[in-house]
Length: 398
Image (cartoon, rainbow, N blue to C red; front, top):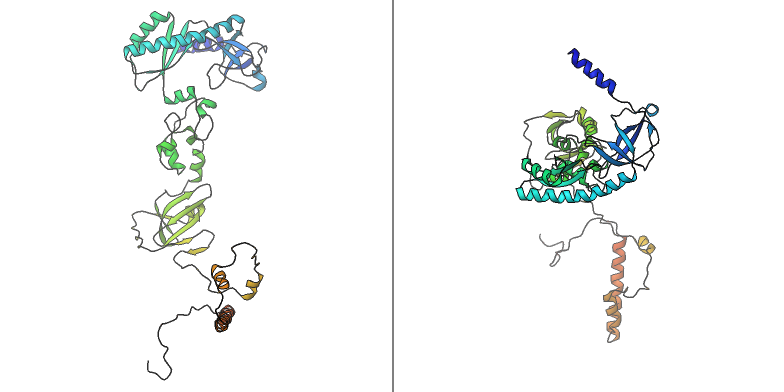
């Protein structure tokens, strides 16, 4: 134990503390990484050679070197070796061509060996002492023979790394359902554990197609509002459960957390109440058999503000005829063509044959006008029913 403690102390003492930190972004990387240096000579836009776990790599500085003590930065750092020279830039550009050739060679060997793996990328280190192949596979792949063949053809150290669907989406990128770039590509540094319970907490429809992202897994954004929904729904009964409210048994058919409103329903009524009333006044009931709804029966809708809407009541229809004053106030525009009714045009075009017919027509028109005026003056709401046949006199028997 004493030997182990002394070793850890020696390693901690040997760790170098850099006074400045520089954010560096690599090619096809989703985020910048922090590296340490001893001076502030590195500025934004400079290409630098850094030491990583893979070896020597070259990247672009995303910002100026920052003082660690001034800004309180405490990040695990690897060193910045130097600012890139012309030879480093030339090697970097040549590596892009050699990576395409190595990618082609590796694909040929994979198809020759019939391996179940999907090669995604090939990345050389700056000095081409090592190459990293990234591939996608559903299961573990025995690539021992593949390593032998690649070592014979490429003459460098070879590393094969298997990733999952989420890592592939982060590396390739894409546009999500929200219309923005995938979160894993844009800013996420690690993947959170996403479960279907997060969708249940947010009262979402459990449709895996709509809840899945570009990677085919559950969307990372389900994690963002999960804690808020847990707090808002704390103490509430579950969706679809039965509760007793104001002496009646209801079933919870809907809950809107944002509007703080819940919908309770049974065979007679539909009630919209607040979540506070549901939490305080509603009593959970289990095993209660609710009465079935009768065919043709309409429910009464009651909102939380106290307004009652009886759906079963017939619609109110006014039987009052418009008065003459209201009729006179209406603007009459007869200037348009075709505004004259068809029947009136026919009557105007028809000429009576003699004076007798002319008198009878004028008498009928007068009688019709008088009847219309009498109807307009009446304010009764009753509807008269006319019967066919001869009207009985008072002296006749019923």
